[in-house]
Length: 92
Figure (tube, rainbow, N blue to C red):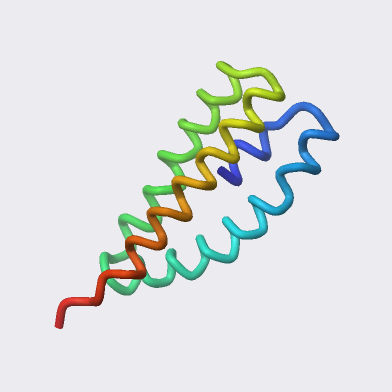
């Protein structure tokens, strides 16, 4: 989502992405540290590369307004996934 916001062409629509990007950066940093500790370095390094290709595809396919809607939908799905991930206890 942060990478898709970086590809946003319209300045005013970019302002509307600030709350989503702020939450994504903070939550992504915390979840990245957890994933690094839990799953290793490879997954943490490969995930942004895969996200870059998704952001590039979204920016090519959608216009500015549609990209804003897509960014906020990805934000909602990411928050739900984080809520589910945080809700499950770690296995010993």
